[in-house]
Image 1: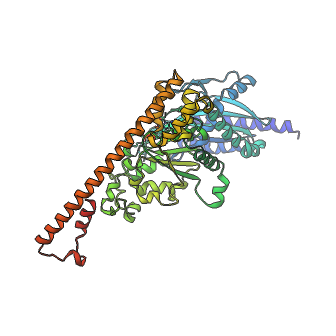
Image 2: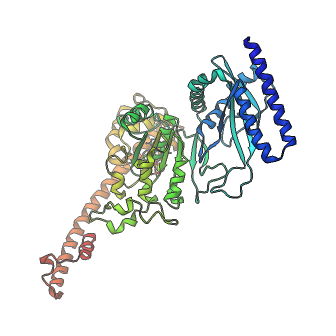
Image 3: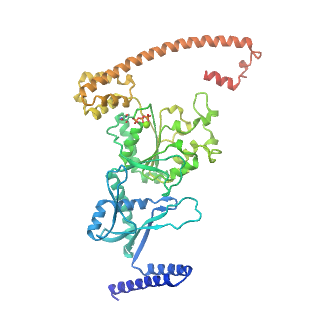
Length: 522
Ligand SMILES: Nc1ncnc2c1ncn2[C@@H]1O[C@H](COP(=O)(O)OP(=O)(O)OP(=O)(O)O)[C@@H](O)[C@H]1O
Ligand SMILES: [Mg+2]
């Protein structure tokens, strides 16, 4: 039999089966009809020259990233234009513009089809939307509609599609997002309920202008961070080989206004990652936290700002050591007791995700914690291996100052008067000024670069004078204080020695722990 005859016979067979299905629907009772339909559909698929792949929007509990990739790929104007002009002019496209987005996106309307050509092979995409049947009981709210794409290909092209077409789509969709420079900033709000689309995060388009070029910090440090990020992003093989979860943790610390948040934005822009701004105070307990973190996608930065204010370290008050740091409490780290409903998020719950068993849930994720007070952080968070890089964001130094001058006034080093430059170099460190404060001075005088520089030098000098005065004052007060304290301590000791019925208790090491602690605190 000739090939064309074979396909004609197959087509008529499939047609007959489809006809039988329609007749069945009209004649038989529902249960019988369903069973028959099932058998006939299987038969139809066996004899059909096509094979079908379903890519549903929600896969179990997780959003299917492949669905999003296909949607983006098909919505890219290039693809759509190509597909529409090449064949299917009747395809109906839905147009959307997300709030704050600069671009209009195309999408397939419900149950519409579109063809695409890959390596000379034609495939057919259908966007299938069906109403979900009303459920009497469900563990979690489900969306009212079930959405998915069905890919129809010729059976003989199956290998090609599985081997390279889907990978091509994923790659292309990432490229499209990067090209559109469309990053998303996600945030959580109180009482994480899985919404109808099973997504507990709210998102907005993220368009932060901060980049590594505009970031004022030590150039060497900047280079190291960029290298680290690059290695991380291209290190899939390394992480797999070494058996480590593909994630990285950065702890940014330093005074307010030194650029911690700006660095996070620069990281996201550099890698093209989304940001999940996790507001821990809005999360009620560890299980809610787990749900939230499970719903983060790969290629993302999960940020917890001001970690010292977000997690209640004072719960460990009992374990406060004499030097003011906090002791590692194994009970808490196991999460025992505190995972009950209503209880708060524990550090253990969080660390479980950063380097515990849950850390391998999803891949290519960066955790960034920020704090203004690194000394307040729990030692569990600081121990080696927890956060891969500790980055100090400090006051403005001369190299950082030059970057700010270039950013705000478009002034290169050689365009600034040598004497003025020297003056600035001489006092900027001692002035202990934050990049945010420098920016303020430069912004308010940005129309006149010369004036801005003069103003900045004045501000720097003023701060130096003020600081010197403060340091002098502190010294004097400290010395006076020390003298007074000594006198007071002597008096106290004499008094105690006279009053105490247990005069020698301290000498024999019987001093109460509480007394000792009180004294230490004094
Ligand atoms: N290193 C820096 N480079 C460039 N601009 C900076 C830098 N630091 C601060 N700025 C400027 O100051 C503003 C505040 O900085 P940013 O919010 O990044 O500081 P922060 O360290 O996160 O402060 P906080 O601890 O209060 O959150 C930014 O909008 C930016 O314009
Ligand atoms: Mg900040």
